[in-house]
Picture (cartoon, helix red, strand yellow):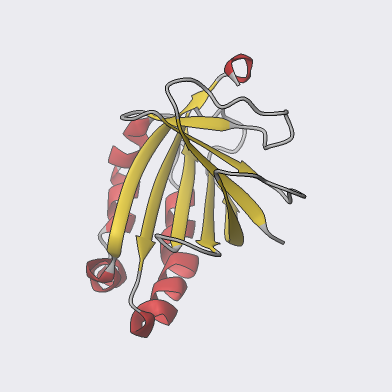
Length: 165
């Protein structure tokens, strides 16, 4: 099933009809707005098709996620199988198990780039500093795969209250 990612650069929240997903996120360092939505008949400008790859409930599923951490990257074709195996069997599940992680997801962009997107709904940015999070980032498999990342972007977004969208 295709999902959609909406990316908008604007000093104010995008005006939407309410059918474009439950949550809007704003980059904490820019004016970029981000949202995810299920199947859209006609998503319109600013929306990119995504293929969902993995979704894992986090260690804190009943907590509110005030932040959304995103890692976008490309990977050379010769390393893609190892990269996907690493993300799906070690990295994403490991980060999902960290207290303060509400939800972990992975997508592949159907067009454009970076091609791969991993996103983590978290309670606070400090979750990324927890010993459990850091341990998962520094495994031998991580040390083999991460140097192959290309065009990598790491972004922190804050949840936008529904009244503002």
